[in-house]
Amino acid sequence: MTPMAAPESPKSATGPAAREPFRLDADEADAIAELFNIGMGEPAAALSAMLGEEVHLSVPSFAVSTRARITSEVGGDLEGGDPDDVRPVCAVRGSFTGPFTGEALLIFPERGTLALAGRLVPVDPAAEAPGEMEQDVLTEIGNIILNGCLASLSNLIGGEIVGAVPGYGAGAPAAVIGSATDPVLFVRIDMALAAGDARGHALFLMDIASLDAFREAIRRAMAGL
Image (spheres, rainbow, N blue to C red):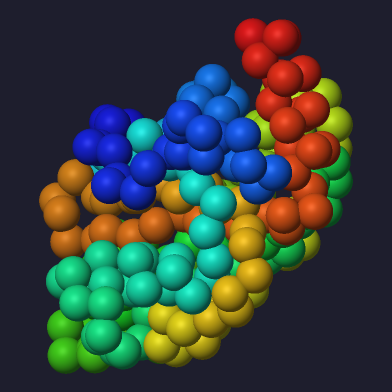
Protein backbone atom coordinates (compact mmCIF):
# COMPACT_ATOMS: atom_id res chain seq x y z
CA MET A 1 0.00 0.00 0.00
CA THR A 2 1.58 3.27 -1.15
CA PRO A 3 0.28 6.77 -0.28
CA MET A 4 -1.10 8.86 -3.13
CA ALA A 5 -1.07 12.63 -3.26
CA ALA A 6 -3.79 14.19 -1.16
CA PRO A 7 -6.95 15.20 -3.04
CA GLU A 8 -7.44 18.87 -3.66
CA SER A 9 -10.50 19.15 -1.42
CA PRO A 10 -9.56 20.98 1.79
CA LYS A 11 -9.51 19.02 5.02
CA SER A 12 -11.37 21.72 6.89
CA ALA A 13 -11.79 25.44 7.11
CA THR A 14 -9.52 27.41 9.41
CA GLY A 15 -9.78 30.87 10.91
CA PRO A 16 -13.15 32.42 11.81
CA ALA A 17 -15.09 29.95 9.66
CA ALA A 18 -13.73 27.12 11.77
CA ARG A 19 -15.92 28.29 14.66
CA GLU A 20 -19.14 27.82 12.69
CA PRO A 21 -21.42 25.06 14.07
CA PHE A 22 -20.88 22.75 11.08
CA ARG A 23 -17.09 23.13 11.01
CA LEU A 24 -14.31 21.22 12.71
CA ASP A 25 -11.08 22.95 13.58
CA ALA A 26 -7.75 22.05 11.99
CA ASP A 27 -6.71 19.71 14.81
CA GLU A 28 -10.00 17.81 14.58
CA ALA A 29 -9.68 17.54 10.79
CA ASP A 30 -6.13 16.22 11.14
CA ALA A 31 -7.37 13.67 13.68
CA ILE A 32 -10.09 12.51 11.27
CA ALA A 33 -7.52 12.05 8.52
CA GLU A 34 -5.30 10.04 10.87
CA LEU A 35 -8.14 7.79 12.06
CA PHE A 36 -9.37 7.00 8.55
CA ASN A 37 -5.79 6.51 7.38
CA ILE A 38 -5.31 3.88 10.10
CA GLY A 39 -8.77 2.44 9.47
CA MET A 40 -8.10 1.91 5.76
CA GLY A 41 -4.67 0.36 6.25
CA GLU A 42 -5.65 -3.22 7.02
CA PRO A 43 -8.45 -3.59 4.43
CA ALA A 44 -6.28 -1.99 1.74
CA ALA A 45 -3.47 -4.42 2.58
CA ALA A 46 -5.94 -7.32 2.38
CA LEU A 47 -7.13 -6.11 -1.02
CA SER A 48 -3.55 -5.72 -2.23
CA ALA A 49 -2.80 -9.32 -1.21
CA MET A 50 -5.96 -10.54 -2.95
CA LEU A 51 -5.14 -8.74 -6.19
CA GLY A 52 -1.42 -9.40 -6.10
CA GLU A 53 -0.85 -5.71 -6.77
CA GLU A 54 -0.16 -2.65 -4.69
CA VAL A 55 -3.15 -0.47 -3.83
CA HIS A 56 -2.33 3.23 -3.52
CA LEU A 57 -4.35 5.40 -1.12
CA SER A 58 -4.49 9.17 -0.81
CA VAL A 59 -4.36 10.98 2.50
CA PRO A 60 -7.99 11.10 3.69
CA SER A 61 -9.63 14.50 3.30
CA PHE A 62 -12.51 15.88 5.33
CA ALA A 63 -15.07 18.56 4.53
CA VAL A 64 -18.57 19.67 5.39
CA SER A 65 -20.21 19.50 1.98
CA THR A 66 -23.42 18.49 0.21
CA ARG A 67 -24.22 15.47 -1.92
CA ALA A 68 -24.71 17.79 -4.90
CA ARG A 69 -21.21 19.25 -4.53
CA ILE A 70 -19.66 15.83 -3.88
CA THR A 71 -21.33 14.51 -7.04
CA SER A 72 -19.82 17.35 -9.07
CA GLU A 73 -16.31 16.91 -7.64
CA VAL A 74 -16.11 13.13 -7.58
CA GLY A 75 -18.03 12.59 -10.81
CA GLY A 76 -15.66 14.87 -12.68
CA ASP A 77 -12.60 13.17 -11.21
CA LEU A 78 -13.85 9.73 -12.23
CA GLU A 79 -14.37 10.69 -15.85
CA GLY A 80 -11.41 12.80 -16.80
CA GLY A 81 -12.14 15.98 -14.87
CA ASP A 82 -15.36 16.95 -16.63
CA PRO A 83 -18.05 17.65 -13.97
CA ASP A 84 -20.72 17.61 -16.69
CA ASP A 85 -19.83 14.07 -17.80
CA VAL A 86 -22.75 11.78 -17.03
CA ARG A 87 -21.28 8.43 -18.02
CA PRO A 88 -22.31 5.73 -15.54
CA VAL A 89 -20.23 4.88 -12.51
CA CYS A 90 -20.29 1.66 -10.49
CA ALA A 91 -20.73 1.76 -6.74
CA VAL A 92 -20.89 -0.48 -3.72
CA ARG A 93 -22.76 1.23 -0.92
CA GLY A 94 -24.06 0.49 2.53
CA SER A 95 -25.39 2.40 5.51
CA PHE A 96 -23.79 2.31 8.94
CA THR A 97 -24.98 3.12 12.45
CA GLY A 98 -23.29 3.61 15.80
CA PRO A 99 -21.91 6.64 17.62
CA PHE A 100 -22.39 8.37 14.26
CA THR A 101 -24.48 7.30 11.27
CA GLY A 102 -24.20 7.62 7.54
CA GLU A 103 -23.38 5.87 4.30
CA ALA A 104 -20.16 4.37 2.92
CA LEU A 105 -19.52 4.09 -0.83
CA LEU A 106 -16.81 2.63 -3.04
CA ILE A 107 -17.04 4.13 -6.53
CA PHE A 108 -15.21 3.33 -9.77
CA PRO A 109 -15.92 4.24 -13.40
CA GLU A 110 -17.12 1.37 -15.57
CA ARG A 111 -13.79 0.80 -17.28
CA GLY A 112 -11.99 0.91 -13.93
CA THR A 113 -14.41 -1.68 -12.56
CA LEU A 114 -13.67 -3.96 -15.51
CA ALA A 115 -9.92 -3.54 -14.97
CA LEU A 116 -10.27 -4.20 -11.24
CA ALA A 117 -12.43 -7.29 -11.74
CA GLY A 118 -10.04 -8.53 -14.41
CA ARG A 119 -7.41 -9.11 -11.72
CA LEU A 120 -9.62 -11.84 -10.25
CA VAL A 121 -11.91 -13.21 -12.97
CA PRO A 122 -11.79 -13.49 -16.78
CA VAL A 123 -13.23 -10.35 -18.39
CA ASP A 124 -14.31 -10.08 -22.02
CA PRO A 125 -11.93 -7.56 -23.66
CA ALA A 126 -14.86 -6.25 -25.71
CA ALA A 127 -17.03 -5.59 -22.64
CA GLU A 128 -18.09 -1.97 -22.22
CA ALA A 129 -19.89 -2.35 -18.89
CA PRO A 130 -19.57 -4.78 -15.98
CA GLY A 131 -21.67 -7.93 -16.15
CA GLU A 132 -22.99 -9.91 -13.20
CA MET A 133 -19.63 -11.53 -12.45
CA GLU A 134 -17.74 -8.22 -12.46
CA GLN A 135 -20.46 -6.66 -10.30
CA ASP A 136 -20.06 -9.46 -7.77
CA VAL A 137 -16.30 -8.89 -7.69
CA LEU A 138 -16.70 -5.16 -7.02
CA THR A 139 -19.30 -5.91 -4.33
CA GLU A 140 -16.88 -8.24 -2.56
CA ILE A 141 -14.09 -5.67 -2.81
CA GLY A 142 -16.43 -3.01 -1.46
CA ASN A 143 -17.31 -5.22 1.49
CA ILE A 144 -13.61 -5.72 2.27
CA ILE A 145 -12.77 -2.02 2.04
CA LEU A 146 -15.86 -0.36 3.54
CA ASN A 147 -16.79 -2.73 6.34
CA GLY A 148 -13.12 -3.41 7.02
CA CYS A 149 -12.56 0.30 7.57
CA LEU A 150 -15.67 0.62 9.75
CA ALA A 151 -14.53 -2.34 11.87
CA SER A 152 -11.12 -0.71 12.36
CA LEU A 153 -12.77 2.58 13.31
CA SER A 154 -14.94 0.73 15.84
CA ASN A 155 -11.81 -0.56 17.54
CA LEU A 156 -10.17 2.86 17.50
CA ILE A 157 -13.10 4.77 19.02
CA GLY A 158 -14.12 2.03 21.45
CA GLY A 159 -17.70 2.02 20.18
CA GLU A 160 -19.46 -0.32 17.80
CA ILE A 161 -20.13 0.88 14.25
CA VAL A 162 -22.45 -1.54 12.47
CA GLY A 163 -22.24 -1.61 8.68
CA ALA A 164 -25.06 -3.02 6.58
CA VAL A 165 -24.21 -5.61 3.94
CA PRO A 166 -23.21 -3.39 1.00
CA GLY A 167 -25.01 -3.63 -2.31
CA TYR A 168 -24.08 -2.87 -5.92
CA GLY A 169 -25.55 -0.07 -7.99
CA ALA A 170 -24.69 1.81 -11.16
CA GLY A 171 -25.79 4.99 -12.85
CA ALA A 172 -24.90 8.63 -13.33
CA PRO A 173 -22.92 10.09 -10.41
CA ALA A 174 -25.93 12.14 -9.28
CA ALA A 175 -28.07 9.00 -9.12
CA VAL A 176 -25.43 7.10 -7.16
CA ILE A 177 -24.21 9.79 -4.75
CA GLY A 178 -27.28 12.01 -4.72
CA SER A 179 -28.06 15.65 -5.40
CA ALA A 180 -29.39 16.87 -2.05
CA THR A 181 -28.12 20.20 -0.78
CA ASP A 182 -28.32 19.47 2.95
CA PRO A 183 -24.91 19.57 4.68
CA VAL A 184 -23.12 16.28 5.35
CA LEU A 185 -19.80 15.35 6.92
CA PHE A 186 -17.67 13.97 4.12
CA VAL A 187 -14.49 11.88 4.22
CA ARG A 188 -12.87 11.00 0.90
CA ILE A 189 -10.03 8.60 0.16
CA ASP A 190 -8.78 8.19 -3.41
CA MET A 191 -7.71 4.69 -4.45
CA ALA A 192 -5.70 3.39 -7.40
CA LEU A 193 -4.04 0.18 -8.48
CA ALA A 194 -0.32 0.44 -9.13
CA ALA A 195 -0.82 -0.15 -12.87
CA GLY A 196 -2.99 2.98 -13.04
CA ASP A 197 -5.90 1.40 -14.92
CA ALA A 198 -8.33 1.38 -11.99
CA ARG A 199 -8.87 4.56 -9.99
CA GLY A 200 -11.78 5.24 -7.68
CA HIS A 201 -12.88 6.65 -4.35
CA ALA A 202 -13.95 5.44 -0.94
CA LEU A 203 -16.47 7.92 0.45
CA PHE A 204 -17.95 8.17 3.93
CA LEU A 205 -20.93 10.53 4.23
CA MET A 206 -22.15 11.17 7.77
CA ASP A 207 -25.30 12.86 8.97
CA ILE A 208 -24.65 16.38 10.21
CA ALA A 209 -26.71 15.50 13.31
CA SER A 210 -23.85 13.14 14.20
CA LEU A 211 -21.31 15.97 14.47
CA ASP A 212 -21.15 16.17 18.27
CA ALA A 213 -20.95 12.37 18.62
CA PHE A 214 -18.33 12.32 15.87
CA ARG A 215 -16.25 14.93 17.71
CA GLU A 216 -16.43 12.92 20.93
CA ALA A 217 -15.45 9.71 19.13
CA ILE A 218 -12.46 11.47 17.57
CA ARG A 219 -11.26 12.76 20.94
CA ARG A 220 -11.65 9.34 22.53
CA ALA A 221 -9.78 7.60 19.73
CA MET A 222 -6.91 10.07 19.62
CA ALA A 223 -6.51 9.86 23.39
CA GLY A 224 -5.98 6.12 23.02
CA LEU A 225 -3.33 6.32 20.28
